[in-house]
Image (cartoon, rainbow, N blue to C red; front, side, top):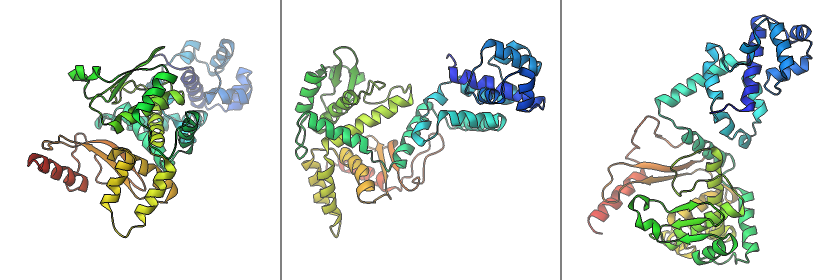
Length: 391
C-alpha cells in the first residue's frame, strides 16, 4: 500500500525531531544551523509541513546526517511498530473527527513522544493479534461508541427522513408500503429491482439484498423476505441515494469492510430507513401510553408490530433510538443472537449496543461462548424446544 502524504510528513518530522534530540539541539540551535525559522521547523516536526529538497538538505547538513537517511521511510528500531502503523490506512480510516479529535492534533500527540506512542501501538497490536481482532471489528466498535456518545439519536438523519416524506408527499401518519418504495426507486433513481434471481443461487440465499452499481443500478432482493423486511431493504437503498452516500457495501450482510465510511454510511442509511418507516411522533405517543401502564402489556406491544408493519428487530431498534432522547431512558442494552432454530449448539452475537456500561459477562477471549444463564439464551432454548415439540 502506498503511504499517504500525511504520513510522509509525519515520518520526516519524527526523524528530524529524533536526530535533533539525539544531538541535544534545541529548535533555536537547529534554526541557527539550518537557516530555517523556529516556527517552520516546529511545523515540520509535527508533520504539518513537508519542506522542499533544498530545505531538507539544509536540515540534513545541520544534523550531520545523509540526505537519503532523512527522507527514507525507515525509522529506528524502537519506532518500528509506529512505522508499520503509518504504512497502513488505519490512521486515515479511523473516524477521529466523529469524536472531536482533529487529525492534526493526533499527529502532534504522536510527535510529542513518539517512543512512548510507538510502545503503546506495539501493545495494542499485540493484544489485537492475541485476540484475533480484525480491522472491521475496530470500525464496528468505533460506530457503537459513536452511537452511545450521541444517545443513539441523530436529529440530522431524522430530518432527512422528514424531508424525503415531504419531497414525495408521503403521509407521515400512515405506513409506507414496499410497493411505494419500489416505485420511487425505479421511477426517481432509475433502479432495476429483481425479486426472484437470488433464490436461483443457493449460495446467495443468505443475503437479503445485493446491489450492483451503474448508470441503471440493479438491486436483487430475496423473495423470502416479509413485506416489512422488504420495505426496510428498499428504504435503506433510498437512504443511500437520497443522502448521496457513495462509499457503501453492496451486500446486505458484510462480506468485506474496506473503510469506516462503508460502515458509517450503512448505519446512516439503515437509520434513515427506520425513521422513514416508523414515524417518530406516532411511536413516541404510543410508547408514552405503553410506559404509563402499571404492568408490562404484551398484547399492546404485539399490537405495535401490527400497527407499524414492523419486525420485532425493526421495532426494538427504533425504540432504542427514541427512548434515550425523549424519555431519558438510558439504562438498557440491545443484543441480537443468531442460532439454529432446530436446536442451538452455538450462539453468535451479531449486533450489540450498550448504554451506561458494557454488559457483562462479555466475550473477550477467542471463541468464548456467551453465558447460558442469560435471559436471551434461555428464551432461545425454550423456543427451540417448542419448535422441536411442534408447538
